[in-house]
Length: 368
Ligand SMILES: Cc1ncc(COP(=O)(O)O)c(C=O)c1O
Image (cartoon, rainbow, N blue to C red; front, side, top):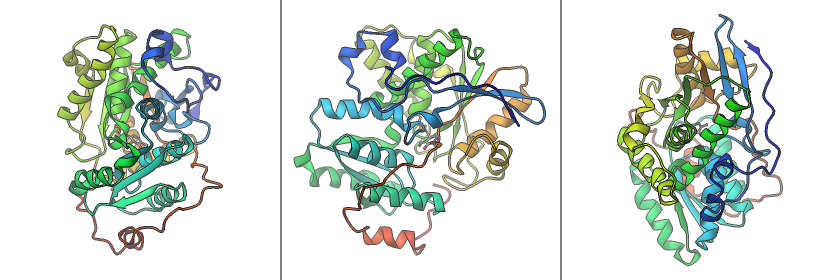
């Protein structure tokens, strides 16, 4: 694999493309700045000669990047605006969203509660969990994904004095998805600047789908014809057309209320193809195609088994079968490990969590 020249990233502190395009939103939308401005785009050429572009959201923030940063800028802004003192969110044991919420939420002065459920335990999952704890987040454990709503409600009731703000899984509320509306506009600015051609299709890992939903809206606002290939890596209970529709409608609604004209939800959804063939045995279960993609791209992109390796596997298949098109792989995994120096665990790990880490927990049904 050979790598071409990367476009310059933006200067630290630059405002989101959404505000540049619609200045009136600066007053309407609260934001806590976390990112380092536009992330670079970079061409890669595979051994067979196929070329594709990478959007380096793995470098979306100087410390800990990935696709949670853009969402959290707006989510933390909203939490401050409504006077919340605690953030409560949910996810799988190795959730990058939970970790990013602990990291950036604590840094911004919030208490953070994470309600987590088991997934296949890997060294990466273990590291994420221990980082959550070291960052001073309160950790609560639900034995199965289905128990999450009840456990989250309990957390909310027991912390009601802190005026907690609930953040849905993956940070994929309409407000969180605005971060990816902005990212779609940012990509369009890079096209206009000549950093890359107009992509025919963007390939990305899809879980709670705030990334895909926001991007579809941002690309439409920018009048780009680019389509989105959203590669499902989580259960159909989470990653499905109905939830995607709801998210597109909710996110569009925020913009429409600010007087920004948008295509209909149906037209926005037409841009997104949700594909189901890459998940293999289930969420967090590695696949042969994912391993092969990670090996192919090893020298240039670090991929994880749960999200980005599976997405890259599906992307590389498409790239091989539609060589003439311009493909872009949106890299959603942080390049850097979070910095947690100075932070000290506040509480002991709950017993159920220690049991999970020791491998004695009931294994997750791989069909979920
Ligand atoms: C590395 C990575 N890629 C992709 C995703 C999926 O993004 P979304 O939940 O917005 O679909 C996630 C989060 O769940 C993630 O951590």
